[in-house]
Image 1 (cartoon, rainbow, N blue to C red):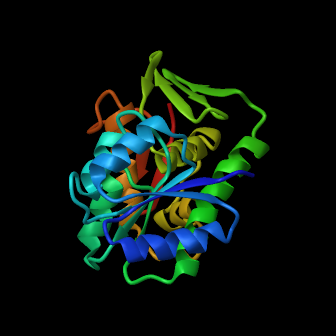
Image 2 (cartoon, rainbow, N blue to C red; image 1 turned 60 degrees about the horizontal axis):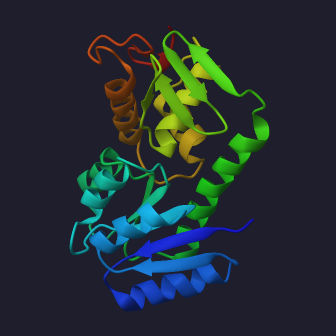
Length: 228
């Protein structure tokens, strides 16, 4: 599998080290050193994963996420030197799929990237259904596209994975730990607030009235479930 990765960071020594390590996996790795260059590259190239630092010039990492999500669902792994939970959650709010806190072990970064690639591969391999239709929602599984009343909805990879899980197991209640383990993988260091963030974002995108959801419901004290 020919994997293409974009590394975005203004610290050239860090970029050089990451590129060298990822290239050892046989991946094609390119670099951008500011947010403007990153956005332009993502617009003009097809990347499988973007590794994006939070603190970069000419659009910081959060701004890059926000801009990119207007035209691309490429998986984004955010790098942040800040350890505060709010920075991590904000990265996910703006469309990042995962995060790694600096200083990090390069093996951890590789593991996160491989997990993202594995989920994408398994989705294509395991599902023969071309689409899932529930009420006004239509999920095109292989293309990872979602339509609400025939209008396309822009979801991140994690948002799509969560919606697909819900839609293929209607009525099943998932607690936050189950969702975290299923969508992000066992051993993921994030906490259950990550799940709440993604559920809220999904509701904002697919529900006619997010305050009174039609599709993603809350089972108070337990978790979430999907029902049209």
